[in-house]
Image 1 (spheres, one colour):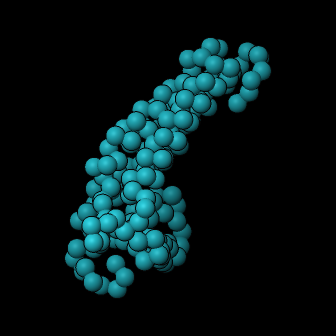
Image 2 (tube, one colour):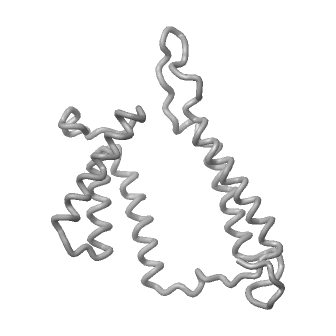
Image 3 (cartoon, one colour):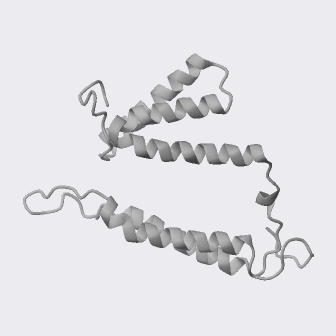
Amino acid sequence: MTDTDNDQGQPGWMNFNTAFGLGAIVFGMVLFIITPDQVERPRLLFGQKPSGLDPDFFPRMVAVFFMIAGAWLIWRARTLREDNGMAALDGEAIMSVLFTIGGFIVMAFLMPWLGFVISSFILLAVLSTFYGNRNILLGLLVSAGMPLLFFNMLRIWLKVVLPQNPIFPDFLWF
């Protein structure tokens, strides 16, 4: 991004940076509005909350940061002269990004039925195969190990509630 007055890119304040800034503001507003319905509340202990912070504090803070970043990008778009490099992407790059986004969407829908570990395993195995994994054994080890590591780290150390495997609810760590 440059602030110079050479003739590259679109002049004026309405360019793709403005569109991304507006998108960030809208995403932040939606995230801020839906957060209370999406965050599970801890149980009361003797009528008191177990900690001083609300569980929706950090998601709402991220939403506010999205809105601030979007407003900053719109403000900066007034003076930026930049070519839209995304318009020059080839079909393979666009397909890779869409496949990855689709994989995460499928994972989000599978997670309530399969649990965090199994749905993450499926996602990692499919993505590593799609992106050209040549060592199947290593790919399976990483696909199994990373979800188990993150599940245990989030569940045991950070006390985050994650969907468990409904088929084997007390099997191993997941």
